[in-house]
Length: 158
Image (cartoon, rainbow, N blue to C red):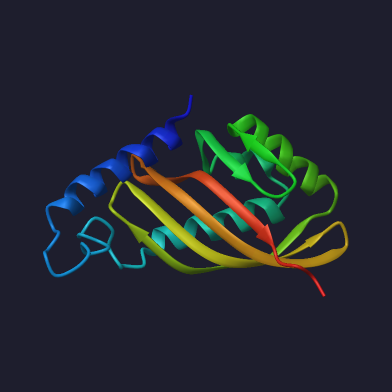
């Protein structure tokens, strides 16, 4: 099921339609017509920290539980869709001795049901220190934020 792609298309269409009503003759429409708050929600930061703690404790099932059923993880090396594929991918990293030193959320925004967070991370991948950038797209499921899409870009290392 392609739920995240459909959600993004619907959100984009909603923003495009609502943005059209805010257009003025003097310039472009406002970029953010009140849909996403600038409030940095601590719950979004907690998801990143929960991810780091679960991974470093060697608990791939707990890492996978932080994703929606059809969530996806994307990097230059893998595209994993669904909790089982995500669990299996991170289990391989855990088994290889991977360790995430830090995840720093730089910004997060939410409309109450969908959110994004951007940040940086530092990790040890099979003995090699790496760092890079992350983007998380989250969906509110009941009282919890779950990761719908997670992209990682490893910075070119010196």
